[in-house]
Image 1 (spheres, rainbow, N blue to C red):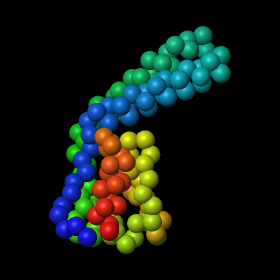
Image 2: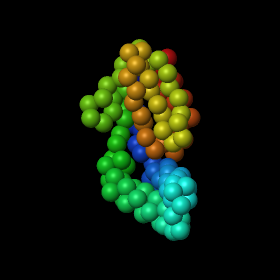
Image 3: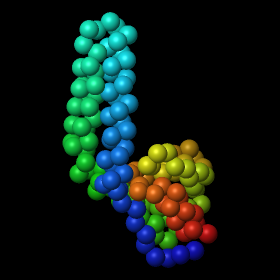
Length: 129
């Protein structure tokens, strides 16, 4: 088992790309809903979806980009005092730009906005051995 500390920080480019994808989905859904209810102004759904996601992205950026997870010894430690001992990790999987950790007890944690989620998983797995 490795004893050095490894950190996983949020990647700004992954954050932006995630919000671009979210904006596209929000725009399409808002337009679909307006079309389904018979609105003559379907295009306003695109404006509203884009504005909502852009505001969300701007408002939460400083908090989301400051989140750091650390591998130290036999524990994965995250923001808000989250601690996941390696022997409690049941599943590691990538979900878009996130890495989901599921414990044997069913707790779920996200390491958000990773530039390379597969590399993050590989690093955790390498430390677990």
